[in-house]
Length: 122
Image 1 (cartoon, rainbow, N blue to C red):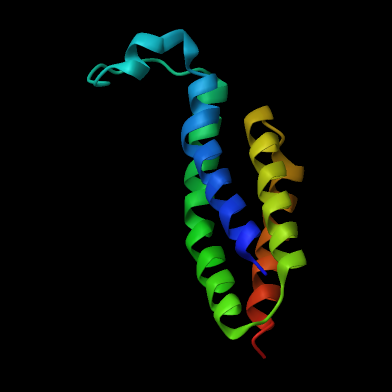
Image 2: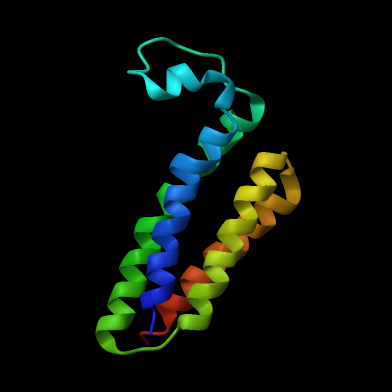
């Protein structure tokens, strides 16, 4: 109950922070493997991926806190957690692709899911 969703939320963190920006920065492999002292020009996709990662890191603590508290209380909201993860994965793709309005709606949906998870306590 919520174990898998919590693990996948952390895997999605690694995708956001490490994998996606790395893929879009392969042209700068020497920089990626070095101390990164120099400033390099990142592609538009890499810049978007970094901004999407920053947004994910803003909402991940709330998700993890709510999910862990629900787990401690024995309240099963696994389907809501799965919806949140799915929306956050879609958000990443939409952000990297530069899709403005739909991306914001997906983000709003993920916030609604977090609120529903929190309301499960009452």
